[in-house]
Length: 80
Image (cartoon, rainbow, N blue to C red):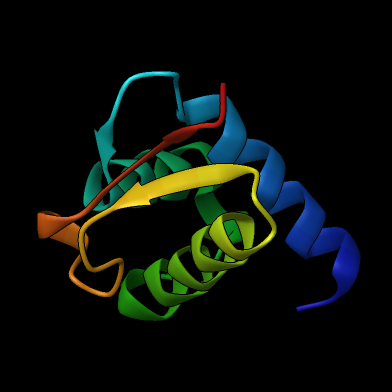
């Protein structure tokens, strides 16, 4: 993926994220649904979105609670 694709995925992630906590798995599924065929199918696409979520956490645009690699057991939200 190129940087324009990454930015587009980031936009979708931020549009799905809120000020309240949301499961990482929920965010990944919603982004995959919204992007449709623009994202690789199945686990490959989910992994791409998960890596972009991690990037947004590292850059300080999202907060995380829990182990971000365990999608069903961690949550993210927009920074206040």
